[in-house]
Length: 63
Image (cartoon, rainbow, N blue to C red; front, side, top):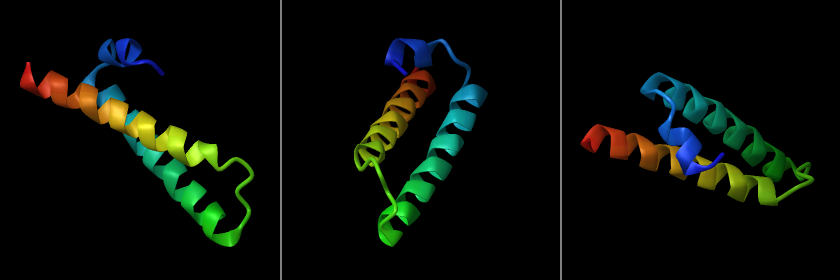
């Protein structure tokens, strides 16, 4: 999801997205540790998506 799309969401929606991504990141870490991860690039995608959401949340808090 692009940052422009994220800026249109409310804080509650952003928090729920962040929570979902945190769960997904945890599951990916478990898959990595057991050797079952088929797409290693997913870890990077989720981590960057979380950073995007946190950036938009910080922008909204400052404004």
